[in-house]
Length: 167
Image 1 (cartoon, rainbow, N blue to C red):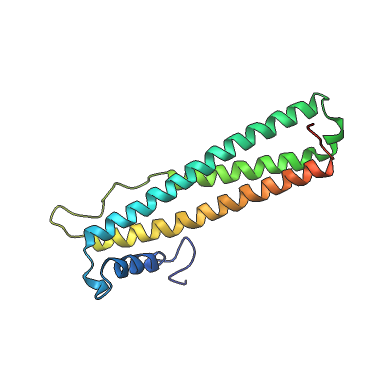
Image 2: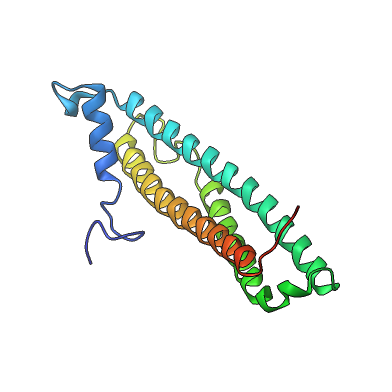
């Protein structure tokens, strides 16, 4: 198996660690302070968590609007949209899957600094693991983001196809 394979490769995330080391100590990246590398990796995880949180909030609002629209259509409020219900359900499914990926991103499933021992060993393992987690969560975020974007596009097409006018 490829060592950099998506979600399974043992060396995924190595690139981000190398880049952080270069930024911290351009003249000799191998001498970058490990504490600073760990801090930067946790900072990146915080950014990913924040982005996932924002996308999850958007998805929640989007799904609420879709459910209200579907309820209105099924109650007979917009008969011209009945033919497009399947598209709205598809949008709802995409937004739900996107939300699930956001929840996976925000899930903490390891003990903070869990690989570092009391004697100071294990920092390299902690850094490697954090690189893996960042790589995985970045990919989860892109999947979630594209799911939301496709759902929005389909919703737009639904509205255009039905010639829905709000004014």
